[in-house]
Length: 318
Length: 294
Ligand SMILES: Cc1ncc(C[n+]2csc(CCOP(=O)(O)OP(=O)(O)O)c2C)c(N)n1
Image 1 (cartoon, rainbow over the protein chains, first blue to last red):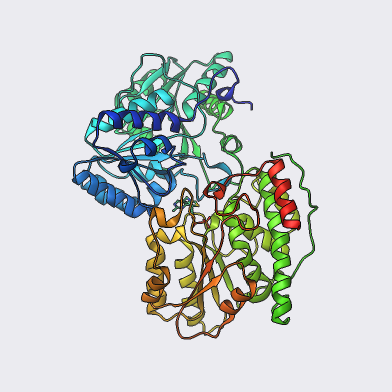
Image 2: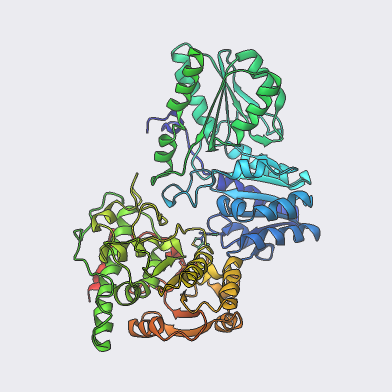
């Protein structure tokens, strides 16, 4: 594995573990918290939750549209549903329910998309969730959070439980290191600058944050100073941080484990073109993936340190 | 796991579709059972080799696939897109390995492809892709998609005045998806007697038993109420399956509820939820092959 994000010295985590642990913890403190799932107790890591709170786990079976409607009803009845399902089925299958029953209706349901992006690797494009960011970003009133590591995952779960707004959490399965500096809390709606730089800004989210940090190291070696931003809230997006990056570094690369059309990159570009136009490169998934495991696919789409370095150099040469 | 050698060399002997359609019924059952047994071994080896796959559902559905491909479906590996072919859709697309296995054995794809199942750039992904694999009619994987597509195929055949039939194989857990019932209602309404839905009724879904999760019973009554002719058979009895698939149409779409055992044929996998997508280790593979060779 050539990518710095996967080097052996840093410990790697499956964010679903931190997610389930934090949710179970919160459920002990607040009896209104319930989990809703679609035959996904195992894949959502809800085994421990089920054991401790068997009556507060509502498994509707393999029926995602119903699952979202049921969650809206539970919210109406005073509960705080955390809906846990594989992201492609949670979002794609039940998109209209998310729009009408959750966002438009204004129910503070927490949609927890498990194993997003290319995490399902060999299972193929039906199971990849790379369209969820654009799909959900198109819906008004939905807060989209993509935690980059276990620390942010725990913070996001905690925040969502009391935020009283519809939320989508993108809970990664692809292993990541901790990228959040100790003591830096997740501030929903605000980006985190993880490294300063003056030549180019890399704005990343989720799995890609660690890879962006690795790219910054590689760029530093050839004299390019890259600023690294973790955009953990994709909606509403942190305009100020984006405008400052455009003004101060003059070049922006975005990188996400999602299609390039309409997700984080587009959200950043919408701000940049209207407020302070600078050259950009948008990295993401460009097509239905071929067969391969997640590491192969991330490399295939150049969603790695090399890909980010290449895009930054390309911008520097303009 | 991924570099364990395939113990059986590929490619293996090809058995063309419908090979056992015309033989006497007593022999047919025996011959189909032999095919199923060999294919069970191939499924186990392919999954162990790749390190992933949905083994339990592959083993429960393989007798259904053997019967369809070697005795019922009018399909031609040399002309997989022939306009008048019967249409076959595996709606429970997670059981792709069972489909790839029968397609390889029937001559649609080279047997050697199985050794590369799920490997980088392989045409054989974890779920079947109609644009990469001859014989695959529909890209399935998300549950609850096959029957609506099958209803469309059946309407198309009728509109063209064609005699080809459409077969859709569904999981029982899959029936919890509402889209199936929208399709079932449409097929009943239109009296699509050229459509057959086969339910692999193994009573398990991913995490638990169907009846403990979101119960389906009374299942036959549900299909009848939607305007379908229902037949219940032992899903591991090839002759019973053959009779159900070839029975004369009676003006309605037909639902064949095939009662099966998840993990069928391997003692320690049978009827065990955890073998939905567990991968056998070398020792387990060996034991399974021994059991299937008896
Ligand atoms: C829309 C959708 N939701 C969830 C899944 C995840 N999933 C894959 S297989 C499976 C269980 C299927 O059970 P069943 O239909 O009974 O199949 P079998 O037991 O024959 O394998 C689930 C929930 C999926 N593939 N598609």
